[in-house]
Length: 94
Image (cartoon, rainbow, N blue to C red):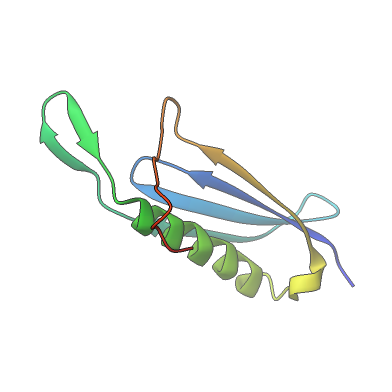
């Protein structure tokens, strides 16, 4: 069994994931794009469900591309765009 770490970067217009093996080798890279709605010059909005879905797809894609079993993924780490906030209420699914 090979252990993997999946690192996820949730950015402004896409979420990227990379699967790294124990030796530090990059075994997979995935990028999932989404929209950034700029309704005014000083305003930008995103759909939180779209970002959540992109993050899930990026992690799954990196795992699959690396040919890793779920039990081989030992850690998933997340990084997000600076100064970002995604507000959700109790009605959101996921």
